[in-house]
Length: 81
Image 1 (cartoon, rainbow, N blue to C red):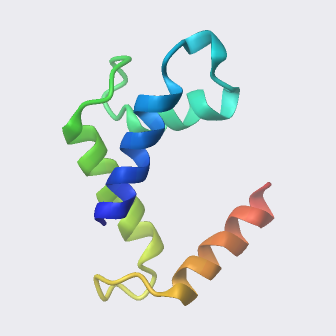
Image 2 (cartoon, rainbow, N blue to C red; image 1 turned 90 degrees about the vertical axis):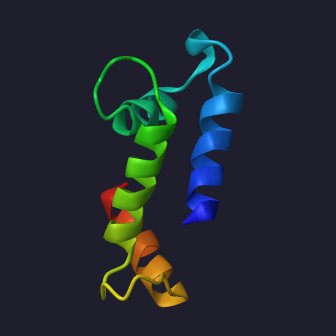
């Protein structure tokens, strides 16, 4: 779960330099993480979002993410595109 937090943190810090430079997809990700819709992302929201993402990926609910679960997630994302 730490890697998810790092990825989200990296994304927020390095892509939010200038809002006019963000793609619509990046803005959508920000809005997803901004759980209380106040226009800011707090560390609590990052932690909550990471927990939610983890639960969505952990299909068999064993509190571990396997490569198979990541492959299944990738397949779902590709279908939705």
